[in-house]
Length: 211
Image 1 (cartoon, one colour):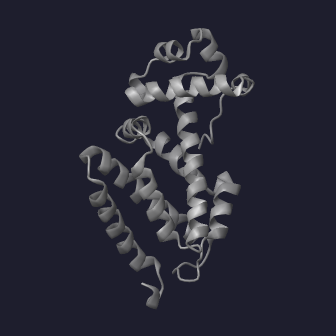
Image 2 (cartoon, rainbow, N blue to C red):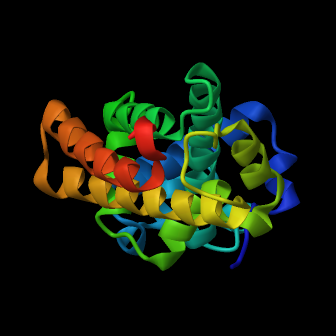
Image 3 (tube, helix red, strand yellow):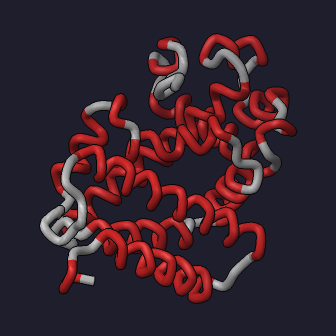
């Protein structure tokens, strides 16, 4: 695993306004086209910076894209943690709420960014999207989430079981998002399919009377 990628320190030395402007230009380009079609020239033109400056901040357009994707993943993780607290550690309710929020995609640009990402998903993108939730080697991220999950009703015996359970749930979530974008599903239909799949999973992971 390459771990969470970050830009060069020079990027973080920029003023908040300049960082925001550059990230907005990156987001605009990656929302317009998938990563493999994206152009650094378009990014620097929109941001109003010299082409050479871009490479002072990022190794290449791939690093810029994965940094943006990681920022979204971080936001999703924070919302997921809030949902776990809201639902008293119920992992299924928390996943359903996270999926619901991801389908809403506050604005068109966010939706197009994720559409391009999910319809061109590869192993590296999937890893970036899931590692804060399912990678034990990311350390504090998985630990923080696992400590909030109520395992009393779950048919698991240790942290390893929980780790693999979350990997399965994230795989279903990603496939559901890809299906949603590929088919342009109505919101209610996408939610219905996702909840049905999680309920099937729940029968296997919940203990006896809790199913």
